[in-house]
Amino acid sequence: MSRFANKVVIVTGGASGLGKATATRFALEGAKIVVADVQGPAGHRFAEDIGGIFVETDVRDSGAVDHLVDVAVKEYGTLDVMFNNAGVRGPAAPVSEMSNEDFDQLVSVNLAGVFYGVRAAARVMTPKGQGVIINTASIGGVLPTAEIAAYCATKAAVVTLTQATAVELAPSGVRVNCICPGVMLTGMTDGLPAETIKRLDRLQPIGRPGDLTEMAEGVLFLASDAASYVVGHALVVDGGAVAGRPLGI
Ligand SMILES: NC(=O)c1ccc[n+]([C@@H]2O[C@H](COP(=O)([O-])OP(=O)(O)OC[C@H]3O[C@@H](n4cnc5c(N)ncnc54)[C@H](O)[C@@H]3O)[C@@H](O)[C@H]2O)c1
Image (cartoon, rainbow, N blue to C red):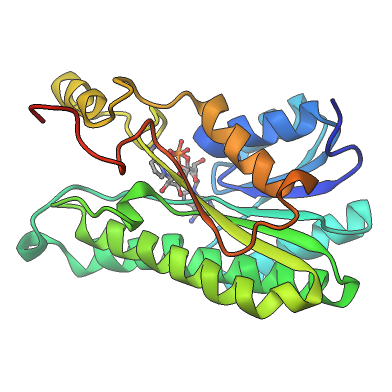
């Protein structure tokens, strides 16, 4: 199946985790991929592996994000899908102990970074009257968790940013949606104690973390023509975690 033959897709945070898995799936379906990340060597290697290009990009820098979109358009002639996925979780801490630096980092990567990506993509897509923008939020944006308050707040803001821009851009033919992944074992969960990972497993009725390809499938659906009437949606892919808790949890 080649749902994305010759479609030009930018994936931020594409050097690892969900971004990498999604870029791989898009490439398998024929897309031309622009991988963006702060991880230079890993990003370069991966982009080469999938026949795409790498643009070292810090999404906290609006000029760098504008440049990323410019490169995609210059190299491939257009931009069809913008996946604003780069994100950080920051350390878990009670709100009273959270530092300004950690708070600012979360807001600048998770919220400003997504905003810059939406804006840069909209500038290219709106005049063409087509395009798809997908943002990565989190189940933390719809069902907040203690001790990662700022993270959850940035992800809730991504959901709202998605809805507001979806409403604004839909008349021009540009669809904006977001994905709310549940727990996935990625760079973001590296370093968590084994006991915590086990506890995370029990949070979802399905009893295990999400496989990255299961999450990527959600993104590909939102990007595909099958989702042509899906606008401003927050697609929760979480093994049932937001639906409720298994008995005894
Ligand atoms: N892992 C989870 O359980 C989980 C759950 C819900 C949502 N998410 C979200 O999924 C997205 C992807 O995370 P992941 O789990 O794949 O983690 P990950 O750490 O494997 O991937 C995140 C990527 O973003 C990149 N990145 C970080 N800061 C950046 C910046 N300033 N500019 C550009 N790139 C930057 C990292 O280098 C990394 O490659 C994030 O938005 C995260 O919040 C993750």
